[in-house]
Amino acid sequence: MGGKVFHLFKIGSFPLNASVAIFTLPIIFSINDVITEVYGKERARSVVRSGLLIVALIFLTDLLFTSLPPSKFFMKKEIAYDSIFGTSARIAFASLSAFAISDFLDIYLFSIIREKYGKKALWFRNNLSNIISQLVDTVVFIFIAFYVIDKPFAANFSTLLGIIIPYWLIKCFMSVIETPFVYLGVNWLKKDK
Image 1 (spheres, rainbow, N blue to C red):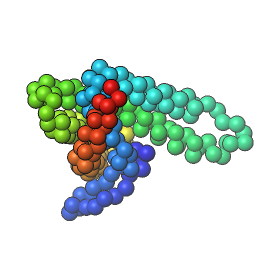
Image 2: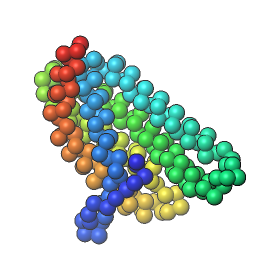
Image 3: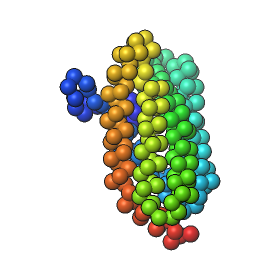
Image 4: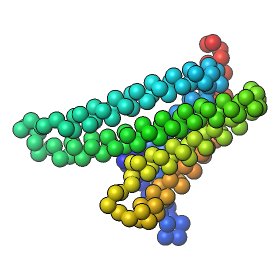
Protein backbone atom coordinates (compact mmCIF):
# COMPACT_ATOMS: atom_id res chain seq x y z
CA MET A 1 0.00 0.00 0.00
CA GLY A 2 2.87 2.38 0.73
CA GLY A 3 3.86 2.53 -2.93
CA LYS A 4 0.57 4.12 -3.97
CA VAL A 5 1.11 7.86 -3.52
CA PHE A 6 -1.48 10.43 -4.57
CA HIS A 7 -1.39 14.21 -4.93
CA LEU A 8 -3.20 16.21 -2.25
CA PHE A 9 -2.57 19.85 -3.19
CA LYS A 10 0.16 22.45 -3.74
CA ILE A 11 1.39 25.22 -1.50
CA GLY A 12 2.83 27.59 -4.06
CA SER A 13 4.95 25.35 -6.26
CA PHE A 14 5.53 22.83 -3.45
CA PRO A 15 3.46 19.66 -4.05
CA LEU A 16 2.00 17.81 -1.06
CA ASN A 17 1.43 14.08 -1.52
CA ALA A 18 0.40 11.12 0.64
CA SER A 19 0.41 7.34 0.51
CA VAL A 20 -2.82 5.38 0.78
CA ALA A 21 -1.28 3.46 3.71
CA ILE A 22 -1.63 6.61 5.76
CA PHE A 23 -5.23 5.79 6.53
CA THR A 24 -4.47 2.51 8.30
CA LEU A 25 -1.19 3.16 10.12
CA PRO A 26 -2.44 5.55 12.84
CA ILE A 27 -4.79 2.83 14.04
CA ILE A 28 -1.77 0.72 15.02
CA PHE A 29 -0.45 3.46 17.32
CA SER A 30 -3.85 3.82 19.00
CA ILE A 31 -4.06 0.05 19.48
CA ASN A 32 -0.60 0.12 21.09
CA ASP A 33 -1.80 2.80 23.50
CA VAL A 34 -4.92 0.81 24.40
CA ILE A 35 -2.86 -2.33 25.07
CA THR A 36 -0.29 -0.36 27.07
CA GLU A 37 -3.02 1.32 29.11
CA VAL A 38 -4.80 -1.93 29.99
CA TYR A 39 -2.09 -4.61 29.99
CA GLY A 40 1.14 -2.63 30.38
CA LYS A 41 4.13 -1.89 28.23
CA GLU A 42 5.51 -5.45 28.23
CA ARG A 43 2.33 -6.85 26.63
CA ALA A 44 2.33 -4.00 24.09
CA ARG A 45 5.98 -4.69 23.26
CA SER A 46 5.09 -8.36 22.75
CA VAL A 47 2.37 -7.38 20.27
CA VAL A 48 4.82 -5.12 18.41
CA ARG A 49 7.41 -7.93 18.27
CA SER A 50 4.75 -10.19 16.74
CA GLY A 51 3.95 -7.55 14.12
CA LEU A 52 7.64 -7.13 13.37
CA LEU A 53 8.00 -10.87 12.88
CA ILE A 54 5.13 -10.90 10.37
CA VAL A 55 6.55 -7.97 8.38
CA ALA A 56 10.03 -9.53 8.47
CA LEU A 57 8.65 -12.80 7.12
CA ILE A 58 6.87 -10.98 4.30
CA PHE A 59 10.07 -9.09 3.52
CA LEU A 60 12.18 -12.28 3.41
CA THR A 61 9.67 -14.20 1.29
CA ASP A 62 9.48 -11.26 -1.15
CA LEU A 63 13.25 -11.39 -1.53
CA LEU A 64 13.28 -15.16 -1.93
CA PHE A 65 10.43 -15.35 -4.43
CA THR A 66 11.73 -12.58 -6.67
CA SER A 67 15.11 -14.34 -6.86
CA LEU A 68 13.60 -17.63 -8.07
CA PRO A 69 13.68 -18.25 -11.84
CA PRO A 70 10.28 -18.18 -13.55
CA SER A 71 8.77 -21.05 -15.48
CA LYS A 72 8.69 -20.65 -19.26
CA PHE A 73 4.92 -20.24 -19.18
CA PHE A 74 5.16 -17.09 -17.01
CA MET A 75 8.37 -15.63 -18.49
CA LYS A 76 6.58 -12.60 -19.98
CA LYS A 77 5.07 -11.72 -16.60
CA GLU A 78 8.38 -12.00 -14.70
CA ILE A 79 9.30 -8.34 -15.20
CA ALA A 80 5.96 -7.19 -13.76
CA TYR A 81 6.19 -9.69 -10.89
CA ASP A 82 9.72 -8.62 -9.99
CA SER A 83 8.79 -4.96 -10.31
CA ILE A 84 5.81 -5.28 -7.97
CA PHE A 85 7.36 -7.59 -5.40
CA GLY A 86 10.82 -6.03 -5.66
CA THR A 87 9.28 -2.68 -4.80
CA SER A 88 7.22 -4.21 -2.03
CA ALA A 89 10.40 -5.72 -0.56
CA ARG A 90 11.89 -2.24 -0.27
CA ILE A 91 8.65 -0.92 1.19
CA ALA A 92 8.47 -3.90 3.57
CA PHE A 93 12.03 -3.16 4.72
CA ALA A 94 11.15 0.52 5.17
CA SER A 95 8.00 -0.46 7.03
CA LEU A 96 9.90 -2.92 9.22
CA SER A 97 12.52 -0.33 10.11
CA ALA A 98 10.03 2.47 10.78
CA PHE A 99 7.66 0.14 12.65
CA ALA A 100 10.45 -1.18 14.89
CA ILE A 101 11.67 2.26 15.86
CA SER A 102 8.39 4.16 16.13
CA ASP A 103 6.15 1.55 17.77
CA PHE A 104 8.62 0.89 20.58
CA LEU A 105 9.07 4.66 20.89
CA ASP A 106 5.28 5.11 21.13
CA ILE A 107 5.01 2.55 23.92
CA TYR A 108 7.98 4.12 25.73
CA LEU A 109 6.61 7.67 25.46
CA PHE A 110 3.09 6.63 26.45
CA SER A 111 4.47 4.83 29.54
CA ILE A 112 6.69 7.78 30.54
CA ILE A 113 3.80 10.22 30.21
CA ARG A 114 1.58 7.86 32.22
CA GLU A 115 4.17 7.64 34.99
CA LYS A 116 4.25 11.43 35.15
CA TYR A 117 0.49 12.11 34.95
CA GLY A 118 -0.97 8.87 36.31
CA LYS A 119 -4.11 7.38 34.82
CA LYS A 120 -5.70 10.74 34.06
CA ALA A 121 -5.49 12.48 30.68
CA LEU A 122 -5.52 9.35 28.49
CA TRP A 123 -6.30 11.60 25.52
CA PHE A 124 -3.10 13.58 26.18
CA ARG A 125 -0.89 10.50 26.56
CA ASN A 126 -2.38 8.89 23.48
CA ASN A 127 -2.03 11.92 21.23
CA LEU A 128 1.35 13.19 22.40
CA SER A 129 3.01 9.76 22.14
CA ASN A 130 1.37 9.16 18.76
CA ILE A 131 2.27 12.55 17.29
CA ILE A 132 5.95 12.19 18.16
CA SER A 133 6.17 8.51 17.20
CA GLN A 134 4.33 9.04 13.94
CA LEU A 135 6.76 11.79 12.96
CA VAL A 136 9.65 9.37 13.49
CA ASP A 137 7.75 6.61 11.66
CA THR A 138 6.98 8.88 8.73
CA VAL A 139 10.50 10.24 8.29
CA VAL A 140 12.18 6.82 8.56
CA PHE A 141 9.66 5.10 6.28
CA ILE A 142 9.58 7.77 3.59
CA PHE A 143 13.35 8.10 3.35
CA ILE A 144 13.95 4.35 3.11
CA ALA A 145 10.99 3.60 0.83
CA PHE A 146 11.16 6.51 -1.60
CA TYR A 147 14.68 7.95 -1.63
CA VAL A 148 15.92 7.77 -5.23
CA ILE A 149 19.63 6.95 -5.17
CA ASP A 150 20.44 8.33 -8.63
CA LYS A 151 18.93 11.76 -7.89
CA PRO A 152 20.71 14.53 -5.98
CA PHE A 153 19.86 14.99 -2.31
CA ALA A 154 18.15 18.34 -2.95
CA ALA A 155 15.73 16.77 -5.47
CA ASN A 156 15.01 13.90 -3.10
CA PHE A 157 14.60 16.17 -0.10
CA SER A 158 12.01 18.34 -1.81
CA THR A 159 10.02 15.34 -3.03
CA LEU A 160 10.25 13.46 0.26
CA LEU A 161 9.35 16.49 2.33
CA GLY A 162 6.31 16.86 0.07
CA ILE A 163 5.26 13.39 1.22
CA ILE A 164 6.41 13.59 4.87
CA ILE A 165 4.56 16.77 5.85
CA PRO A 166 1.04 15.83 4.70
CA TYR A 167 1.56 12.17 5.66
CA TRP A 168 2.46 13.16 9.22
CA LEU A 169 -0.25 15.83 9.49
CA ILE A 170 -2.92 13.39 8.31
CA LYS A 171 -1.66 10.80 10.82
CA CYS A 172 -1.84 13.42 13.58
CA PHE A 173 -5.37 14.35 12.56
CA MET A 174 -6.37 10.68 12.53
CA SER A 175 -4.82 10.18 15.96
CA VAL A 176 -6.96 12.98 17.33
CA ILE A 177 -10.19 11.68 15.77
CA GLU A 178 -9.40 8.14 16.97
CA THR A 179 -9.18 9.31 20.61
CA PRO A 180 -12.78 8.31 21.46
CA PHE A 181 -12.02 4.83 20.09
CA VAL A 182 -9.01 4.60 22.41
CA TYR A 183 -11.35 5.23 25.35
CA LEU A 184 -13.81 2.65 23.99
CA GLY A 185 -10.99 0.13 23.50
CA VAL A 186 -9.66 0.65 27.01
CA ASN A 187 -13.13 0.28 28.54
CA TRP A 188 -13.85 -2.81 26.44
CA LEU A 189 -10.60 -4.54 27.39
CA LYS A 190 -10.98 -3.63 31.07
CA LYS A 191 -14.39 -5.35 31.11
CA ASP A 192 -12.80 -8.56 29.82
CA LYS A 193 -9.86 -8.36 32.19
